[in-house]
Length: 582
Image 1 (cartoon, rainbow, N blue to C red):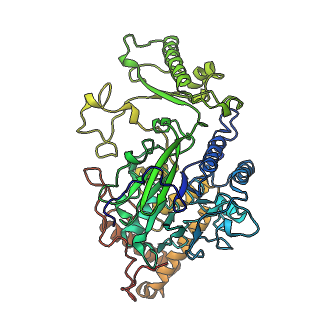
Image 2: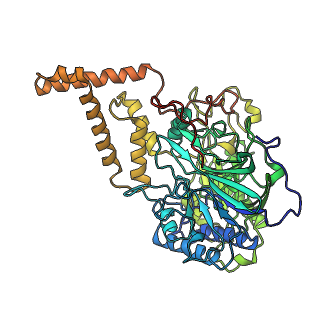
Image 3: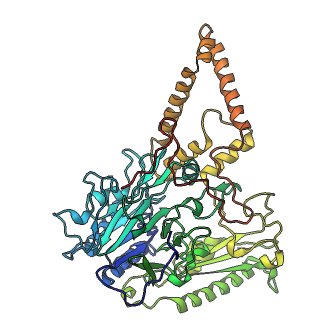
């Protein structure tokens, strides 16, 4: 490890040894593409990222996942994306760096090489991207939308783990003059599964065969960075920073939409207990009306020379203004008692937000010709405890031509009593400091949404039934594939595989086979049922569900990583196997 985790690059240190990398994440192309007002937002932001790369003469663009909003983007979205990449990334410009790693380990597509090395194409700005949770591989053939762009030679898709039981990350090794950069990629994997893989030492980061200290190491990930609570109060999984190897210099963290790079290099801090720095670019377009999406959107220019680096944020101008506020009706001097009074109070609040948005709107002449782009996103969160509500759609109709989201302006909520021990429990918090009317901070109150996974868990919990053959996490994953990825065969394929595995387990138990040998069909069913029930109780006695993510320490920080977290899993036949070098 270097003495300093983030040595500063001196001003003007630009030469043939300096990598210029434009970094972005969570572009979400195609988000609300059918909306007549907001349909172009994701494409305008992505085009600005490409324009920045061209103006800054970037060596390449690095994307940390979720280039597309949908797993199966529409033909319109796919065509627009290919059109933008062709307009900005193809050309006669010479590529100033070279790849020295074995590209068969980096790229899984047929030709196993970077697009700029194809003699049939003139690539001016290569794009390297991992997949996210929105555009991950799924369906027949396990293909992602990025595979289409890779086959068309418009993008370099890397970071796909094909064997989840033993994940080996081989870096793309780049050299420009005397500067060496190793880029690791880890496309999105379900957080619970990835956590188990790290905890079981099933994730290995390969390092260059020689001169490991001479390489500047960058890693792109697309996972939850913090623990979140589900709608049922169950903690969702996340990737602990302590699981990542300490030899990394910079971690580009996708999936988190809040931009945390506005202050540039000086505002970044080393990860707690680690020597690397986390760079969280955030999304380029608001895909929800959460307060974190209201932070100004950025991409960034990462310059690397030797073991020194510098990060310069670039604020995106092609971003729709987003303003928000919180209102507690019962604290008003005269709380509204009729619907007319309520709508008058809310209208005044919205008018003030629209005025604020006009003041904050970016001054970008390029967007003057874009119809409706000046209309802001407005969100007013209203606590209506002990008061009345109104119809949000009818209220929003008054602002159809003045805001971009008239049907989503209002979010009514009221204070609820959280169950003890639930994620986000406010017990022990100073209620006066936490917010108005005691007990919670309105700005951090999460949206009231319900995931299908949570509904399944609730149903089983309320009925008291427990599944002994199928794992709840696997059921949730197959349902998620069916609902969100539109994979029609997901549930059937999961059930067939589960039944096949259970049959193999039963047949492998000699005592069970001998016991059923001379019994009738009904008696066999009873024997098998008792066997499965006994195995289910045995698993429950061992502790919590193996698919659950352990809760963090009370201090909220990362837990200590398991010993030798970077070592590959110990194998019975070859326990001394070392990480493979590239």
